Length: 197
Image (cartoon, rainbow, N blue to C red; front, side, top):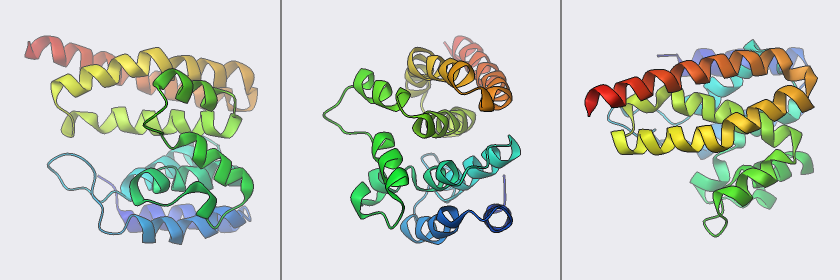
């Protein structure tokens, strides 16, 4: 769908022009960590596309904060690459944000999303993450997994998105556009599931 090189260059150029020191550190670290990993599904899409698309999406929406973009790039590194949040070569704010976004199998979804909702940066990153995931789930998930993902999104992510819109007015426009995209995808997926039954 997109070129890894173009997305990487776009994010790097934005980071250079906006003097995003942490994002510039996160880019090569993320690339090294996700090397040779692929996304779920039959298409074998390089995993790096996911954080890069999220970063490009954030920049296109006017979300250009260093901590948020670096956290976007690293949000799956701990969970998928066996690296502890405290081992990330990043600022404490980014390590904290990534730690909140890293699912602990012991914690349930209520605790996981509650902790995220109490952190501005984690809230924004999680919303971008879920938006990207639901936008690409048709080719990667079974019908059962899609239904579960829709339920989880409606129960946890949409309230998080409303919190972003009301509590962080600097992201109001971005939240509106993300909500529009997410609701459209969710509605399409629900209709597809009904037709497949």
